[in-house]
Amino acid sequence: MPADDADKKRSQDLIDENLKKAFSDTLDEGVPDRFKDLLAQLKEKAPDDPSEEPQK
Amino acid sequence: MTSPDPRDAVLEYIPALRAFARSLTKDAVRADDLVQECLVKAIGNFDKFKEGSNLRAWMFTILRNTFYSERRKAVREAEDPEGEIVGALSVKPEHDGRLQMTEFQDAFRQLKDEHREALTLIGALGMSYEEAAEACEVAIGTMKSRTNRARKELARLMHLDDDTPTELTDSQTLSIVNQSGHM
Image 1 (cartoon, one colour):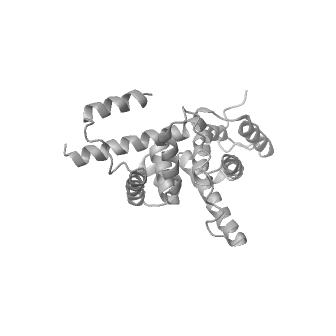
Image 2: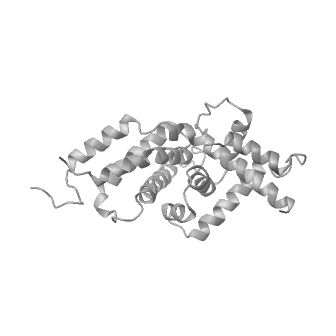
Image 3: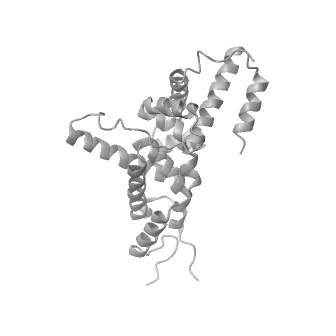
């Protein structure tokens, strides 16, 4: 592999690694309750389930 | 017994949406507010989501459009184009606070929106070019070239292209990457 390609690959790996690190805290936090609660509320407001026939 | 509600699937994408929102807003609090709006819109428009298509990309599009339309409005009202937007990237590095991370974030913050977006979706969140293109409503080729340009620009800002230690061999580099990047 030519040196240029090796350098490019190395810098790309470094960038991707940093990118993953920069967002890993957020990604590892999982789903905060705030959003679970919100979804539950929203579902309650519009209980129709599009995958089924609406139950009257 | 209730059958599983298809809308529950949106929760799975919340962590990635929060990460994307942070990259767009550069502010953790605004990011979560943006995710909240996205969730409200996604559920409110769930009937417009085509079953079998990509829910994650669909939600990313909603989040992205919400962000840009609000920003356009804010810029119009504030008559302070960009000025207000250039805040601190508040993706907090709780990792050993290494210098490299700070440098990286400084560089990342300086990227153009479309470049930061591409790198977040593809580099950080592991989306395919196809999915990222769908989320940003551009052609796959556009997404590819944005990603390449973004990587180049970031490498330039981080001086990865000029002060690469030449004595470091490929095998050494690989072992470093393997150690720290191990999943």
